[in-house]
Amino acid sequence: MLSWEYPPKVIGGLARAVADLSQALAEAGHEVHVATGDWPESEQAEYVHGVRVHRVNQFFPRPMDFLEEVHFMNWHLVQKGSELLNRLDFDLIHAHDWMVAPCAKVLKHAFQKPLVCTIHATEWGRNNGLHTDLQRHISDLEWWLTYEAYRVICCSEHMRSELRNIFQVPDDKLHVIPNGVRAEDFANVHADLGTWRNTWALPEEEIVLYVGRHVYEKGIDLLLSAAPKVLQYRPQAKFIICGKGPLHDELKRQAWELGLGDKALFPGFIDDRTRNSLYRLADAAVFPSRYEPFGIVALEAMACQAPVVVSDVGGFRETVEHGRNGLTFYSGNINSLADNILHLLGDKAFARRLTARASLDLAERFNWAVIARQTVECFRRAVPEKSKEIDLVDGLLEGGELMRESSNHGRW
Image 1 (cartoon, rainbow, N blue to C red):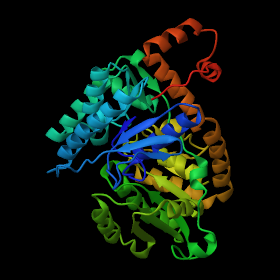
Image 2 (cartoon, one colour; image 1 turned 30 degrees about the vertical axis):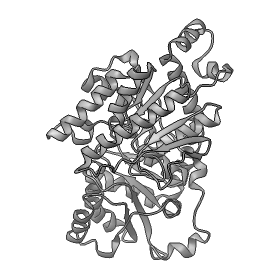
Image 3 (tube, rainbow, N blue to C red; image 1 turned 30 degrees about the horizontal axis):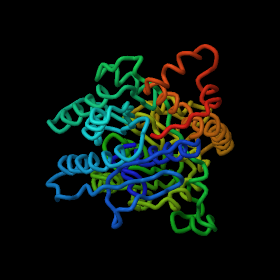
Image 4 (cartoon, one colour; image 1 turned 60 degrees about the horizontal axis):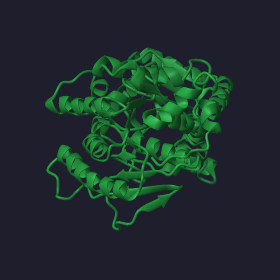
């Protein structure tokens, strides 16, 4: 595995997705090594939940900017990857997103190993087009990675369509495998939630929660714009906007100009325990994204039994079914957003029915053990000798059943 980030370095959803997949593969009996950045004090490999994690120093030499930092990391990843591939007989290389594309390409050709990549999001999608030289450069690296990969994994049908249209990736090269969550990761909450809640809201206040990066595509400005209508009908509502990002100060200024006052709280970055506790207390967890390839944040909220409202964009449309396991609003429509929040706040029994159905979906559809089996099937189709084995039994067994019956474990 090659990844720009891996816990405890967590910038976005990429780190958690790579960690959860790696752990699920290890639990299924496969040997998984992850080469990643953020060099620790010790150069010894970590062994975390059955996964061997190797970190390289992405800050030496000192980079002048973000793009140079990425390239320096790739040089160090090539060195680390070469050491591992010379020492161990890996079956396959799995690269995650454009930040590791140069390393993945070099190792694939130098060691003649099959390459699979996962594209978690695209620069074109994040920015609704390519408007700067940096965006065009990143998009070129994304295309390069999909071109070099034997198989390309994406997390939703929306992303499959995006990769077909932007990069002309052949359909038979694309595999849709959703992300998931580990419900047990969200069980750690503050012991006395009732008392702890008083540090965030008054007893009579209803919590409308957002957790995530403060960037344009996440649509937090839309949530703030919807707040006055919500407060008109539910004056006891309180908006807690967690996270940081380049728009953090601008969003705080917007809240002030809208007159939200103490009805909008910006606590900044929060740790996992605080996040879990707030989700448990939330009367509505809202994710008003303009662009969302999958929307794992909605699953995280569901894991904490928080009723969710999301925009009807991208992968959200495939994870949240309106009126069944959550609510969706018309993307960019402030009135639609406000009305859906008000629906949850005004009908607590309905909100509980949504969270109960969401819990079942997490166990059945977004379970990492199931996702790992689907990923291994994709891996085997990328390895020539394994692909032949699968072709021989296609039509006799379903893909998931085939993986359960197989006794061959891989080293990825």
